[in-house]
Length: 332
Ligand code: NAI
Image (cartoon, rainbow, N blue to C red; front, side):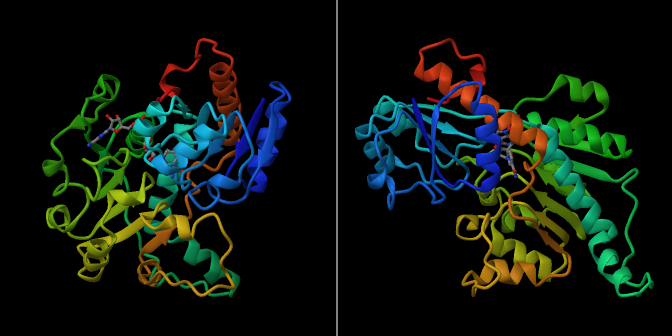
């Protein structure tokens, strides 16, 4: 049985080849994104394996069905880039890796907070040039600060626990309150009550119609002046143009983003010799208080191992009509 991979990087091949020894699939790797531009060119295959920026819309799915594809396997948790209704209509299963390492993403969100706050990236460069001055490196204690967490699923849950460990007051908003977090001291409040109180807000909800541009001009106007916003979820959760205005007015004093609405044209590539046409990301990167990482929150040894094993297991179980071990993996 064959699995065709898209958006493949060297590290994907490394981990999938290693764990495929237990499954014995034929693995075919494409570096390009899956999308309408390439789908006609692929050979017959049993499953396609895609990542966050592959475009698996109705047009692509219709062609996949003609190539005998029975399973679309997402090697990530988010699935906003796949048309699930079109997959169901064409009899194609869709699976994902629901919780490969929530800690990996939560810890990266914390790394962004600490970098923006304590400016270790600046200190590193400074000291290497024998500049031992502290001017401009002033930070603040996380202890006793108020942290707002939007979405307390797998990642938000891990993030809340870390922030409680720093001695922060943690306020959360989710459609369902998590009892364990409440018992640990997290308070669930309506989002409109969290926005004005939080010194730091971290977004951990999925991108849906309801959460698209959750942070826009209206919600920004409710934020505590001088706050820090962290987004490791999906770029579409924030209206970037509204954020740029808020950074200019200093309503938002620190921004850490691991995701960006137009990231598919930029992230996961070396564009160091190219002219970047996206003026919005260039403007964002020009602020000294903005930290952009290129969708790397998931990128740990443990997470890549789990992604490879769970994806191969999902495909094996779906293609061979076995009972799915991980029920939450099945989307369609
Ligand atoms: P999850 O499904 O475990 O948790 C999501 C939580 O958000 C749930 O508790 C859900 O009730 C809540 N939620 C849904 N709609 C909401 C709304 N309108 N308002 C508030 N809360 C809402 O997902 P998980 O694993 O925690 O991942 C969260 C997101 O993180 C994913 O959807 C994905 O987009 C992103 N992600 C980013 C990665 C990266 O490398 N930057 C890696 C993995 C995931």
